[in-house]
Length: 319
Image 1 (cartoon, one colour):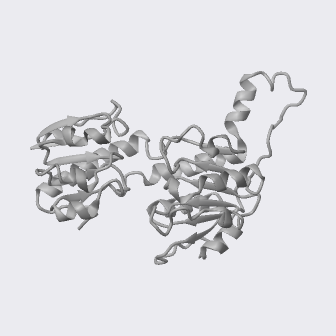
Image 2 (tube, rainbow, N blue to C red):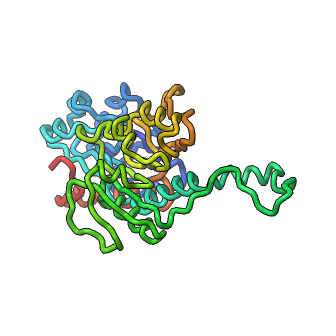
Image 3 (cartoon, rainbow, N blue to C red):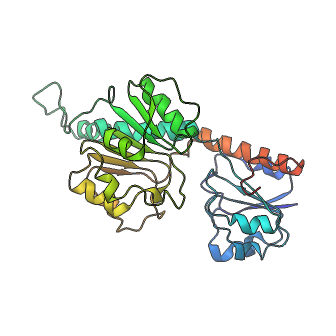
């Protein structure tokens, strides 16, 4: 059996092993595969693995032996699911590997916005504390999160983990989701409509999937509902936010700050307005990428393949 990994570098830049997959057959690993070379690289493969390399229907038509697509991520919009289903190709994702890491990163962004740790550490290294006439100083306003309201848009696994951490830090949690079952027992937790959540929250953290109804959901109109002292955090999908509208709100002081690990176009173009917006932290889609999370992703990928070959596929997204 031939297995082809189209874009393996982000998952495994050299600190993990592909040996788990090699027990199933011959494995070819490409660090990156340009779209125009996918058919050539995957020719003859029964299994193809992709993270962000697109697999549209016209590509699948040119891979007659393909029976299984393993998405090395939770999101699977890079695959034409209907075309795969028509051709009898099973598509499986990895839904649970990064919950702890992404939730942790939400607070890395939030606490940097609140306390500017790097700015102050750099100031000390530059000698500002040594030259200071006072025993303490700070260069920006400092914000305490305890007692603030965290609004979570999308209350799945990651959203709930973010809420759990926020509750432990003394924050009040409100959430918006289309499914409102199994509410947590945190003090003062409640469900809220999107407008109510945006108006009331001191921190808004986005954890919705990118769907037609959520594409561009955080636009100028909805940003205007937020408090000027509020922070917006997005570790989900860049397309949830309209870049220009958020940049305009930040630059005009209508929003205190933003922490974004995702953008609609990745890598971003140099002229993306958020790269120069006021008090806007942009990180390179790295919340998922702790060693621990990537190791889990690799292990779960192997488990998915084993289940498929045993005739009991799991995590199928086009069933």
